[in-house]
Length: 227
Image (cartoon, rainbow, N blue to C red; front, side, top):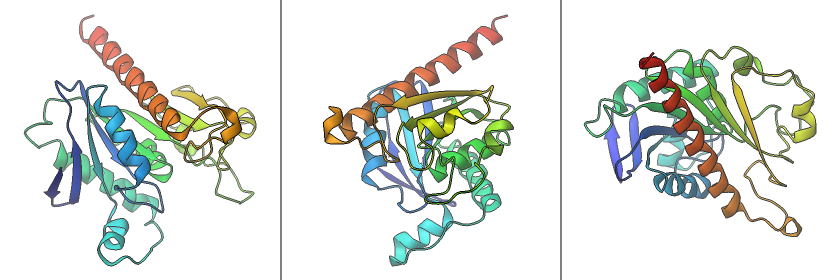
């Protein structure tokens, strides 16, 4: 179901008796209606998580006119995250739900960058985190992970060209990050046929890992409130 906000349209995947709100951002090249995000949102619904998908301003323009554009600067994307959280969490169905920031690839990186700045946000979730630029030999994009003040979950295919298992193993540890690997998955969690897995299975696993992480964070918060 689509809803209109000042920050742009959003797609609601509601859930029965939801335990949390997951704001879900897209990657650099595909918007909120990508097959990956549709499938993930539907899976998260089954775990009693209310999912709201949205688009950054540059992608909103692409959705309207079909012209591909590069992402805006990181500071503008993070600012939009803040606006989205402020506006969407005022919706009557969502006001009382704990808020988690999640995103595919670039959207996940922006979620990690934004989570420290947003009081309502409990934690961040990155799906296929872009540790390295595609096809580029450059410094890893780990500053947001090193500067985290809140917990984060990163779910990664172990042959992701933007950060495979061998590459990430060489990076420093991130004290606030829980890292989970999907066997033979690429940047979109697609495995090779010979692996015995399917992309649908990996997305379902990612949804389950996300649900477990969210429930762990809520349990931790409840314990802190009761001490």
